[in-house]
Amino acid sequence: MSEITLQSPAKLNLYLKVINKRPDGFHNIVTLFERIDLFDDLSFCSKQNEGIKIFCDHPHVPIGPKNLVYKAAKMLKEDFKVKGGVEIRINKRIPVAAGLAGGSSNGATALMGLNKVWKLGLSREKLLPYARRLGSDVAFFLYNCSWGLGTSRGDEIEGLKLKAKLWHILVVPRIKIYSRDVYSRHKLQLTKRNDNVNILIRNLSNGNILGLGSLLSNDLEIDVVKICPKLLDLKEKLKSFNSLGVMVSGSGPSVFGVTATKKEAQEIAKSLSKRFSQVFVVRTL
Ligand code: ATP
Image 1 (cartoon, rainbow, N blue to C red):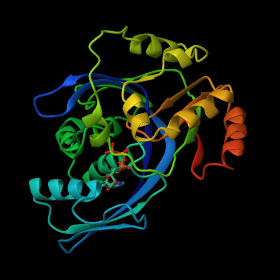
Image 2 (cartoon, rainbow, N blue to C red; image 1 turned 90 degrees about the vertical axis):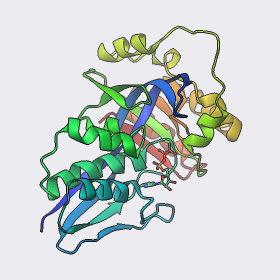
Image 3 (tube, protein in one colour; image 1 turned 180 degrees about the horizontal axis):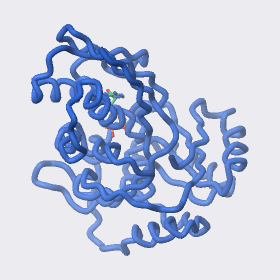
């Protein structure tokens, strides 16, 4: 029996453009992922008996077959005829259904953790199809990189070597928004706009963060705000603190600001903590 503990980080999307709807019902997108230092911990303990057992003390995280960690374990166990089972403990810190991809990250971490404790010896290429079966955001977390450009469903990943390490103020309102609801409301924009992702990537690669505000972009924001109009107030509040750019992450409701320094993020956090219970100062990992 072996036991390991791995960190499972969250992500932000600094850019998300919806290209079109696919015949399979998903959307083709272009997105810039940023891995941030807000983590869940996952502990894996291989067992001689056959069961897959998940433990998690968060009330909104399923511990049965709907958990992405459970699904990851079931797929690998079946496909590689693993003898014996596993107990996996999830220590949740990433807010759930918040646009931070906590569940997806847990799914990817489970694939990597089980690959080790079950000694499967699978490469990332071999794990990628399992990540894609779990969900569109899972593949990014198989890459050991701070930044990734996601295309197709967001699951074709190009790991990017960018110099930038950003500080963020991250506010997570206590409402749950599911990405499927946001995408189902989304109306494709017929007018073509400039594709700013390359300019954004160039600025980040040069460590130039001053012009970031005008380059952050999220096509889903308009739909998220329709579901929760109060997010506009939150965005305005964050902007009033002079942060360098403010945006909803992914399918929301998390809203983040880019700040020039850790101190600035901490000062904004102190002020916002009076009104919001889930306020974090986070950095590119
Ligand atoms: P989505 O875009 O799918 O809504 P998200 O990043 O906004 O994802 P997640 O924290 O991944 O939000 O959770 C979405 C849902 O996934 C949860 O409500 C929960 O029911 C389910 N889920 C399954 N496995 C997990 C897990 N390991 N951790 C958190 N949620 C999980």
